[in-house]
Image 1 (cartoon, helix red, strand yellow):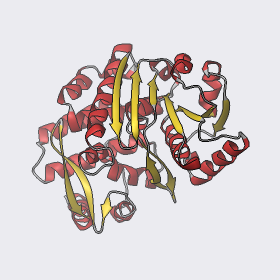
Image 2 (tube, one colour; image 1 turned 90 degrees about the horizontal axis):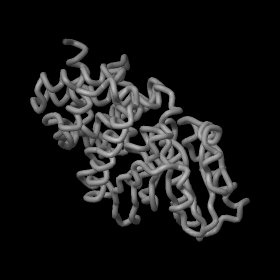
Image 3 (spheres, one colour; image 1 turned 90 degrees about the vertical axis):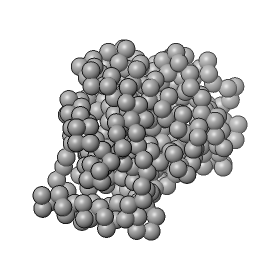
Length: 344
């Protein structure tokens, strides 16, 4: 087991990579426990839960709403939850986001922890203290910064995931490699077969390296004042694609990364050869690299993005594989880019 620590204004979080769900009770404080999970996770793993009241949600992105959070508040009241209680979210990124947001806001804040059951949650969503829900179809517009006390990343839980859920996590692993770790990118290129089979060594490398990268960034910039913005690579257009095309988060982020790669090339920051390496890796991992969306609708969706300030967006570009930079790019410049692509 590998341990990583994040220390921020909203608390200290310990990420336990390689720990198992069946050992959850050993990490819990002596307090009234409430578990928030989804029906799929409950069906497979309820026998490994410690004794507790369970709030079970419908699986999927549709549950990530204020209506769901209001339902959770009602159940917490029925359970006579108080400020000494402890919340554990057991699930993927959606469950971790909802559980974290509910815990951070009920009675002005309860202690919480996560058991991340999906690759996406283990490499990204459960780590860093950001949580929230969608509003009007737009991603994570309502949320808080609140560190879970601990996160368990159990590799055994990945075996029941469908392929689409694995792809969601792989997109985030590629993102981490592109913004911060050229060596990890090289590992992904050489071991794509083992990665797709979720061989133990590949899972350990992907999860450990991703958690190390994200925790190091968050330790320097918890609330996204500068450096943490790098973690949004591929997500500006990715969230827009996800909203407009109703595809999975991982597929959308993969497409968003390739748009960012193409813009990086157009600005003379990234070589064509590196751009080709990135495209080939995404394809070998069965991730999409393009989609058909009206640029005007894309720009309109980006106007709702949290990273927009006035008529510009804090946008992440690549100077090379493993090196990302933030630039403020006007929305009009994105429009010009899409126009030039259509005419080329």
